[in-house]
Amino acid sequence: MLTRHHASMNFTCAEMRDSEQSEEAKSAPEELVQQVLSAGWREGLHVACENALGRFDATAYNTILRNARPKGINKNGPPEHKLFGFTYLRLSNELLEGQNYATFQTFVEKMHANLGHDPSVDPVAPLERSKPEMPIEMILKAAQPKLEPFPFDKNTDLPVKDHTDVGDEVLLAPV
Image (tube, rainbow, N blue to C red):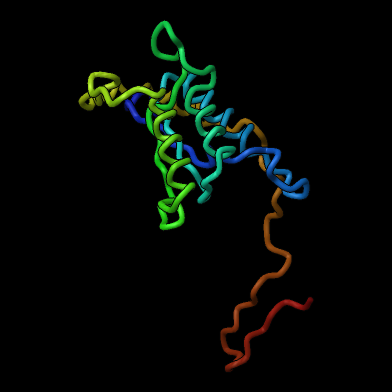
């Protein structure tokens, strides 16, 4: 659907690493980012990212850089997979102070592969019309649930009783 409408996909937590999460959280943001970016690239989408947290350390910036170009810089042309864009969230006074700002400047240079600005590289193309609509049968087939839902009872086991003609009292089912 996104490819058909020439959409871009933007995902968050580009700076987060699995090793920085607590065991109890059972969280794998690094793995999740890689799965989502890979899925977008496989579908031919323009894939973008953003940071989730206000971090100013080299580890976070290096994680973003790796996500921006998973196989590094290609000296023979553009990388096969790369971010179409990156949004830096959490701009703050703390970012613009001393060493934090110097590290951020280095990060921005590295995002541009240490090259100066060149407007002819990856220019923003005008929007294109959507591809022809898919037949409804194809959409319905794609929308079929892959897993059966959990079983649901026909009625709730704690119903609210109708309180008509009881005065001001509200009768509830016994617990």
